[in-house]
Each structure stands twice: as structure tokens, then as C-alpha cells.
Amino acid sequence: MDDNMKEKSLDKKSVDTERIEKAMREILLAIGENPDREGLSRTPERVARMYSELFAGMYDDPVRHTERVFTESYDELVLLKDIPFYSMCEHHFLPFMGMAHVGYLPHGKVIGVSKLARIVDGFARRPQVQERLTTQVAECLMHEIDARGVAVVMEATHTCMTIRGVKKSGSTMVTSAMLGSFRSDARSRSEVMSLIGR
Image (cartoon, rainbow, N blue to C red; front, side, top):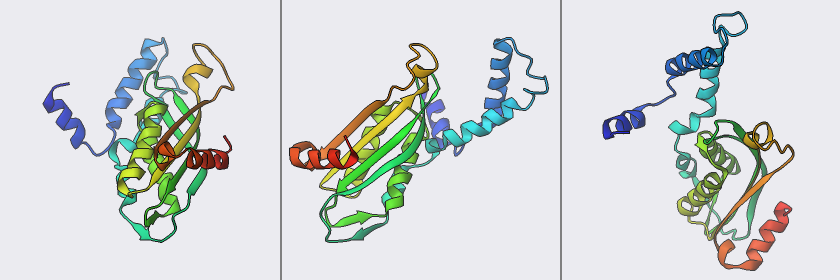
């Protein structure tokens, strides 16, 4: 992609639904379907709306959810468990979904609990791999709220391996990112993993 194309894609504020509709119509033709038949005639439009929702994170900076923090002397573990998330595997454009567990050790500042879920959503709603998603959430919190440590554990089912390819339904992929105290202190890491249930 040349520099002009990169600049244009960065300037966009939303998904190009018209382009997706045209592409979806081509996909229907390519698999041998009739895009004009009753059941499919509005499918390109529906797919475009769906992609607008699934990829909303492309046009959102999750860092904005860290702008408001509260001064607190609390310095023990803060953990939000079982945050549902949905993302799209960038390798096959099939969804993966599961639960995120986000913990941090404050350093004089705490963040609103709903912001943790919003940060997860912001990074999840874009073409992703679970490993990068896990790291992005952890690094965002570590850097933006100046935490002493951040722990993020994500558990997900990947439809790219449950409905195609190896077809191993029931399998769960687990990734973790341990920063700061959670990386350097085995007791802190053990505490958070125990509370998560791992």
C-alpha cells in the first residue's frame, strides 16, 4: 500500500459499507449463488452493517477510556473477570469469542470498572489475533494509568478451527500478558491467576 492509500485509510471515520456491499455481491456470484434471489437480495447490505459493528474498533482509540481516572490510596489487586468479547480472526475472517480477565495493581490511580470492558471491546473490534489483542489491552492499561502491574488473561473459542480445517469443537485458546509486578513477582502472578481460576 503506497503512502497516499495509507493516509486515505487513516482519514476515514467509518467502514465503507457501499464497497462491502459490492464485494459481498461478488462473493455470492463467485460461490455460484444468485445475489438477486429473495433470500439473498439484501444480504450484502446486512453484511455491510454487520462489518460496521464488528470493526468499529478500527475507528476508535481505546486509550480514550483511560483519560478519566480517580486518585485513590488503594494499592491491592483490582480484577474484573469474565468480560465477554468478540473479535474477528484476521487469518480467515471468522469470529473468535470468549472471556477476558483484566487485573491491575494501582499506583495512586484507579479507573472506572466499565472502562476496563470498553478497552477490551475497543481492541477486539478489529481484525485481530488473540495474542496481539491480549498484549494491546495489557500495554494500554500499564502505560496509560501508570499501574504497578497489569495482568490480562483471555480465553476464546476460534471458529476458524472449530467449523473448518481441523474442526476441533470445544477447544479453548488461553493467552496471557503479565506486565510490571505480575511479571517480576511470582506471588502476585500466582494470586491473580488463582482469583481468575487458573
